[in-house]
Image (cartoon, rainbow, N blue to C red):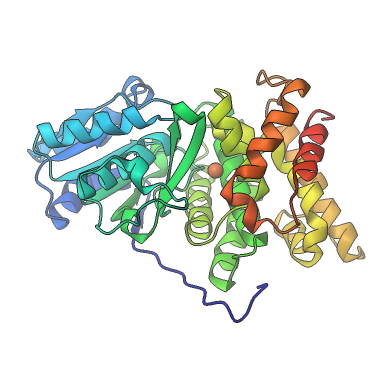
Amino acid sequence: MKNLYELHYFEVPTVMKHRLGASEELGGELANLGVKKPLVVTDKGIVDSGILDKVLQPLKEQGVEWELFADVVFNPPLENVAAVTRSYIDNNCDGLVAVGGGSPMDVAKASGVEIAHGEPVLEYECAEGKKELTRRVPPLVCLPTTSGTGSEVTMWAVITDPAREYKFNVGGPLIAPHLALVDPLLTVSMPAHVTAGTGMDALSHAIECYTCAYAQPQTDAVALLSIEYISQYLRRAVAYSQDLEARYYMSMASMLAGLSYGAASAGAGHAIAQTMGGMFPVHHGEAVAATLGPVMEYNWMGDPTKYARIAQALGVDTHGLSEGEAALAGVEEIYCLTEDIEIPTLREMGIGEEDIDRLAQEAANDPQTIGNPRDMTLEGYKKIYQNCFQI
Ligand SMILES: [Fe+2]
């Protein structure tokens, strides 16, 4: 911890329940929360894959009524949030159920802010001059279908403002889901490249939060175990989709990383990935993964002790290595993992070296830069981006 006089807090308003098949509990859990008519928020992919039917079947059998909003889009914009809010109000719903990856969960949270406050979520952006949240979102149950975002336990939602080509954060304890119902069976139909990208997103949450200025013992503990699980199970989950043990531990890793992310901030990696996502139609996890190695290579000198510990959590044999050597061996392992699970490069995502100046400037403006373990400058971001194009 960098400042022992600063008051740190660790608050987890979300109840976490998990097992293989946990989604069968949804009806009972809604009743516990007093919800009689939830709005189910999801996307087309979840409907087409049959996951939604799997989640809703027990509700049907129990005679639970619901409304459906299945039009959440990738990198969800403000109008997507407003459409969910309208649907909730028009259909007299009394709770929210989010089924999906980060997008449906974040849209449900952001819509919860609009429903509770009666104003557009943009008024509550986490930025200077904006309003503080004052009311709890309606009862919200999140069922993650990927193992990456951790949004089921975080106090954040990330929404795109198309007018500014910018992804903004809204958050605080009042936005946290009431229940994270984690069923790893909902993740087995994820294609390998989605498993890879989302898994690296979880890994970056854990690494960035473990090393950021706001880290504290509680977040360190969950982040380290998350890194260990991911180093043991991500390759397995990518290689064999039906590996239930790997799926279970990846779900746990994502949730643990979300707990560290939910309480702390991130750093340069998320400043980069989030601003890139506002400017290009890239998958958040892939953007994070393609830049994590260069970010760590830049950052490790800011906290060699913690970076050496990360290497150990990644399963690197650090015996006989100096702290600096161990830290760099950990960075090398990240490059190997990224290659093994076939994360596309920035160039393959349609980004070119001519975009570096603009991307670096946006990242430098992002508020998450503030928690980074090494002082960040515009030149630092350019260096990281240039390194990304050497891979
Ligand atoms: Fe992320």
